[in-house]
Image (tube, rainbow over all chains, first blue to last red):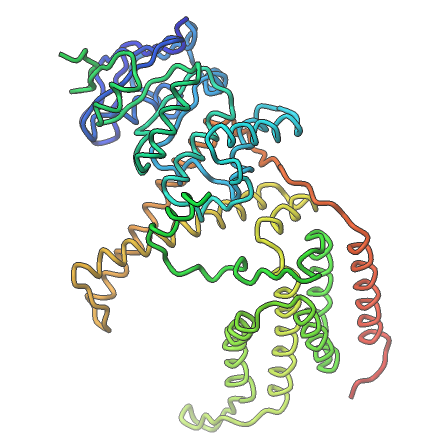
Length: 217
Length: 270
């Protein structure tokens, strides 16, 4: 089952050389894709286009085979694809951890009791059971990163778009995160410049270079 | 979570922001429902703002001191904030008691002592302190988060509450960013002085902060969209109204009515 597909996407930020020119990308259920690329190769831009946060000048975005045309289509897509931002301070905008984790599920219209349970379960699964009442702006960088993952997981997505997920994590926390991801039945696309991380966590790896995705040699 | 504690200690700590959080009191006032406190402090501030007799304002100050004592806030926090507020009122004492008298020519301007001005300065100072003390005692004894939530529960427009919440959340991020930039300047030998170069550098610093916060606001909005934001900030916590809250509201209402009667019942204060 194909979750998302980009076809012939071209994108450039205003006044800058194009990031993508006629690029294709797809992610299917069950796939765990690693995307390797140097800084500034357009890794984050790729994800933002997938979720309709940026609009390509050319090309089409398909979700489950049907064309995404407006905000409404992307809104449905964003429930299925959880996006882990590169900077956790962008992702954690509520004052307490519990509220932040609850934000997504509440938006999805889940009941109060169910949300409370989801929050507890998600935090427990990441070993952060006692973090609910903590203030987000007082957390360390690594803690923020894990809570960000919790906010994404609490929406029970089918797949994840992970933007440099191990940045700021010490080896112990990074291992914990890899374990949680590995034991889940989630698919994902993960961008990183850390090839060994991608080799450990992904089934196949592609390289983003010159605005195109290429297989690793 | 000893691991978390050690990690928190290893991370470079910046000095805590001067926010209401630091004044958190666990006295009886701290346990009151923030909704009750908000309603009372609003009514009280309104009454004090309308007060026109110094006796009434002085009563308000006394009441304020009583509340602060009841809230058991730390004395250090209390004094430092009292000083900060009264730095402003000090200017009133400096300027209000003087009146400019016009002489024959432009050069003949003179300053004349004006007792009415002095009375006005006294009144404003008393009123400002009365309101400040009540705010500190009642709102300063709840976590900021709870106060925002109480506002939402009291049906303050959700746009406003969302704005307060995001403002407070990102104030901390901005402060960290500012401190990082300052440190970056310091390690490259920047020493502030009273010269054009310093002003230019600070202007750049402010400019960068502005641009960065603009970019961040876009990313935060994207993050909100990704999690299905549709305009509503849902509330997770619900407060529980206790008997003590009803009692507090009734008592405060009584006091406010007595104060209002004292003010507007026609008793002459002079």
